[in-house]
Length: 420
Image (cartoon, rainbow, N blue to C red):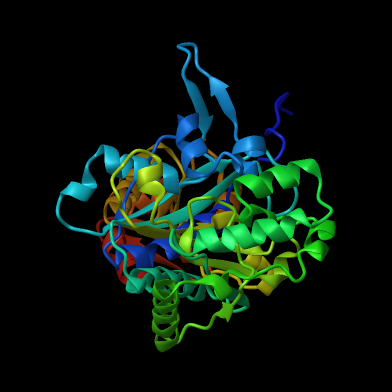
């Protein structure tokens, strides 16, 4: 056994379970690619300041959870705790917003890192697929992203998730609400750190998960009662577009996403089968983030969906994904000449798009057939010296057990015909 183990709060993706994660990533990405979103990939670490400005200095992510370090050259860097700030930084650096085609629509997939107490559904290393639409203020964009996430989940077979929806207002109406909320919070019996957070960003207190804090928040002023006419109209159009698309949602006036950059539309996807870690994804509009990190005004909206959480949600519903077999054909050579011939057959099958594998290591027939069974292949091709002398190989159907001789020169075409 190895001396080393995966770090606490992390996990390894190992076959065959890793195939589920790949299928989830593909299912989430598919509707995005069909809707004009191009793929973007950013570094696994960025400047600490990028997240401090964008995510928010008062957030738990920045103050407690971020893996920050100083390089040998003195740079202050952090492993990325989320994707939006990095994607927007990359888009600004590449001047994608100046190409004349707004919004810039991007999707991404990768690993993210937060120093948290490990528990089921919450890891220190986790995987997300995200999407961002940068540079346009349009309720249809907000609705589009919610609808695409709903489409992705349903394509996987998920049915028991819920969409929570709220509006956080904008720079016109939120300051009035902020002042009213701060007045309310100052009258509560809160610890010093929570009161400090209330002074910096009181909406973060609403997101506090502690029961003793939540009990005191009963009766807190609701942002929906302070929305300006423009924000009310914007939110109502988002709701109408989602409803017209046949997507169900729940209005949640207490929904507050945990990052400072959100404005107006905010939403969360939750699955009650996951216990306390019920969120499987979420997002919203972040019209001021570009300016926070030194860019021009670029109203934007996006989301991130957890691959790990989605897999857990599938398991909670008992959904089994229909995954293609990793191997369709398994070749078993008996003798050196058969190795040469069948290796050529396997190579040609692979070039033609057929998933094929080979019995390596010079195993005998019994051991090689065990490997063929374990591979899950539909067909096994067996050849020995006598077969080759007759110009044939033996083709075995692993489901029916039927075995027939097929000409060496016809085996590739025969397998392609059967598998099609």
